[in-house]
Image (cartoon, rainbow, N blue to C red; front, side, top):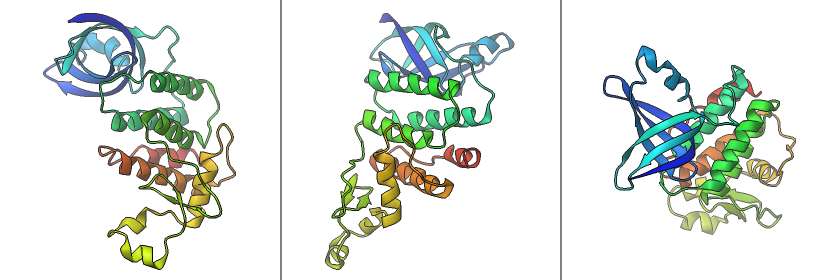
Length: 248
């Protein structure tokens, strides 16, 4: 067993025993870890409870035993450049969205420092910037890159239809191809309009494409379906429904 100083982002907590919780924490140096935190669910544990909100950014000193599934935290405190937990409805909705994306995407204990640093920077943008209707779409695209499932932006007049399963733009399936495709595979093709909007978002980088609320909502849903296809545990996603209502 070793003692390690690291930063962490709280993703999820589950009740454990009478007064404790198990916290899933995405750490910068150890990857995704599960920690038993004692005494949280008591009147004296309110300070700890406040540190365990979704995507709370922490400085942590932890006990690390690679052979154990459940670890312990020696000390935790807000990161020195951490962020205040905003009461703004849009910012809260974006935080919950980001949290759910990470919670349902991360399964490996291997560290992913570029992703961790990106999320911390994105939290800074959320907390200190103005609401951006394209931020959820941008977050999914950039996070996919860090997860190794980046959709390819090879859009062209010859290959204008995005295929969710292949992760790239393809030519329209011919009648022969449709007959030879396995049952249901034809459903992985986005239609021409949705593919065009998908391409616009992939190629936008730091800009915001000219899409209305309906088009943004469809693109966001298509990206979530893309995650579901490429990450087996990415299911029953819900927080985007709140975002649809607050980012119109």
